[in-house]
Length: 493
Image (cartoon, rainbow, N blue to C red; front, side):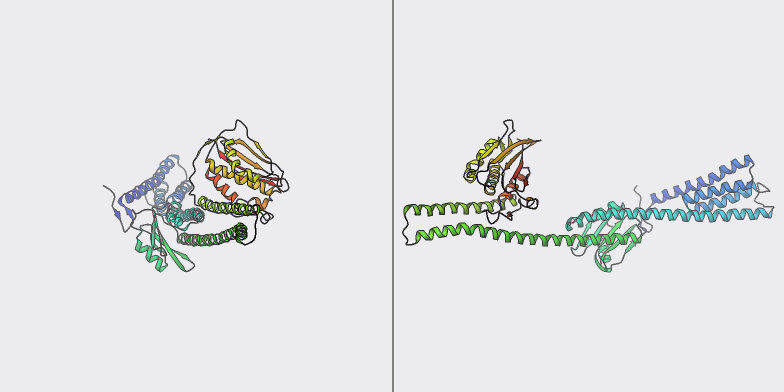
């Protein structure tokens, strides 16, 4: 049969039996020690001073281990034993010498006082140990609370954090802002929703010591922000208030961090929107101006020979292609950011990827000599051919744009563990350390080049997104005056 719970005491019948059994063992051990000493000393014929000191040591030991009550009982029994076995006339409780009355009374008083002092020292040591453990647990709880900055995740985790930190049976938290109770489990009805709400409204600590249940208000200053209920541990009032303050501060901190993050995200979004508008406005205006001028010339009444007419149509054709490419890059960037691009992965040798890129990038290279260094033993890579060719196109076009004419551009590849690293090197002006960490950001363009060379600043960010989608990394090594090397890795097939 399962033990029944006594709600007035908070203990089961099984608990009471266990306590009674422990007390019986302790009394038996203490009185047994007195009996053993009596048996030994009666056979050794020692003087009563030695007997009293030995019995006093037993009393002190009992007081330091099991408390004042058992120690006092042991002291009284030891006094009676000294009187009966060691003070003349022996084997009677009569004391013939008045000095023995004084000695016996002095022993009893000394034993009881020493027991009391020993009990106090034991209690103070236990309190110090308990408070040290509570401080350690508070520190552990604070570390867990500060490590979580997401408000929803923190609210769900706090009851479990508190339960684990203090070894509780259960924990529950009520937050009036969300009008919701967060629990470690639903099998503990003692932590009722009504009491949690009542403590939040009153802002006062509620303790049921018999049931080991306490409900603590969560306050910031005098403003209540909720309550936390704990079952299964007896904690000091100071510790309970510290727990409430820690949790309240962590909730407010997480909410502030979330608000700040939201504000920062809004600010960054606004900044990005402005950058997009500036970039798009500038880049679209140039081809549109050329197209508008060419069309206006063709529509005018001016006499244009066939060669001039052909030149104007070529301008319109080139600038229309440029506009189309700008729109395509913007759309691709949006798809990559939303992770809506599907990769068609297959195994390709590196030379096939380079050849696919050169088909579209040859015209952009102009007078630059292209040098290719690909080892024959280089393993194939598992990639989306069209996407990775696009990465190479962006890198080759950048190298051609930002390095002097007639300087070579080098494409090389080498194995790196289970990856292949591809590099595109130029002999341009180089990029300083500050800008190296920014060149892969959307719409960023070099300070010294943004007005001299056409571009939107999307090519490298698109390349970065494509490479990372393949499970690789992309980076840059550069030195002012010595050129730049862009390198990225791809997984081996």
